[in-house]
Structures are given as structure tokens and as C-alpha cells.
Image (cartoon, rainbow over all chains, first blue to last red; front, side, top):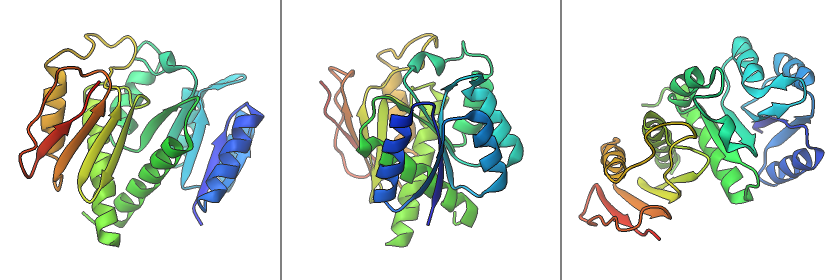
Length: 136
Length: 100
């Protein structure tokens, strides 16, 4: 079973993500705290991280880089603020020309449909599998 | 079937890379690939504060790059900000457009 770590400070969003991913056969581990997210990521294996950009006390890009220092994993940014995904945001340009251009990172804006959530989750986890297997 | 799925997933990943190269906002466009047919739905817009914004010539450049991605058979477009664009549905590598 594929495992997904969902990080968001909105309990309603976490509940929605957890229940909807379970329907599709994913095991979702959720947390509303950035520090706990990093600990979970260090201690457990995940196939994908769903990451809210605006966490209390921690910039999402900063947390993303901390994940990356542990190991590489596909990340789907889930945010209500499209303006955060901009070269004007500190550190974003490097991220865009790095992991985004490798196709291992994607964006999902709130409010989102379950169809778009599943589509992006499957694409990220799938492309990761393809890369890992070195099939092409 | 599993091999087909892997090809579709790799195409999807490469299409995402094309869009990233052009600073397209991935949150506003949906990419689906099935049996090597790529579908783009939503809006083709650049990220905030990226200048210039998508002009009349940019979509055609992007679509040509997508059609050159290995194994892509066809590109289907359902984009709501590309009024007036029209593409031939001309066999392999052709694109169909439905904009509005």
C-alpha cells in the first residue's frame, strides 16, 4: 500500500485528504504541525507528501527543503494562495528550476476536486515508480 | 497494460516538465495522459509575477514541444483562455483544440 504524508493546519482538509485517499487505496498519515511532519518523515517511509504552504511558524518551502535534506520524495503542494507560487517568493525560483522541472513536484489549489487530487497524486507516485524502476 | 501505464506516466511527467520550462502555473492546468493521448484542461497561464504573461505565440510553441515528447500520439486541448486557437487533427502528433 502506498503511503502518503499529508501536512496541513486545517483539520477539515486533513480529514478530507485522509478519507478520500483511503478510498483510492492509499494509507494517509496526517499532521497539522510542521515539526511533527518532519519527525514523521524522518522516521517513516512515504511515497508522496501533500504539503500546505502556509503552516504556522514555518514557511512551506522551508519545510520542503528540510524534507529534501532527509531524502527525495515527490511533493504535491496544496495551497489556497496561488501568489505564493511565484519567482517573487524567496527560494521559489530554485525550487521551480530544480524539482519542479524534474517532474517530481506539482501544485494543487484549494478548493480542489477529488478528481484533480487523484489525478495529481497518481501522476506523481507513478512517475516516481517509473524513475525508480529505470524502465526508460 | 502495465507497460502502457508506465509509458503514460512518463509522458505525463515530461509534459509537466515542458510546462515548467515555460513557467506555466501547474495549479491551473490539468494534464491527463491515456494511451499516449495527452489532454490539457483548464487555463494556460504563467505563474504570478512572471513576465511576460502567455502571449498569442507561446501556446503554439508549448504544444509543439509536447507533441515532440516521445510516444505522444495526440494532444487534446480543452483550455478556457485560448479563444481563437485552432489546430489540425492530422494523424500522429496532431492536436485537437476546444477552447472557450
